[in-house]
Image (cartoon, rainbow, N blue to C red; front, side, top):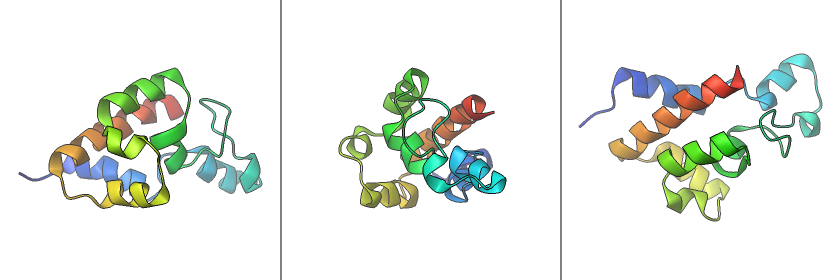
Length: 108
């Protein structure tokens, strides 16, 4: 079983920092890194790690519990983040791509 092109598209957006998260949009605007706060929960730096593992927004948390495996969410670390993005399990990658697709709607 292989990933569909649409799944690869969303995984690529995540891996290439192309989600219009505050960490990127703030950089474009010249905002200091420590001030690029998540616009969804107003806590923490709004980067990929934050969205995937620690954002406290109710909608994001619900999506995370539905699409991101519990192993990665419980006690998140940079090692788990890297592992999630490099995993070869197609089912996990498909769920992750759905998560990213749904999160994009909240970031616009």
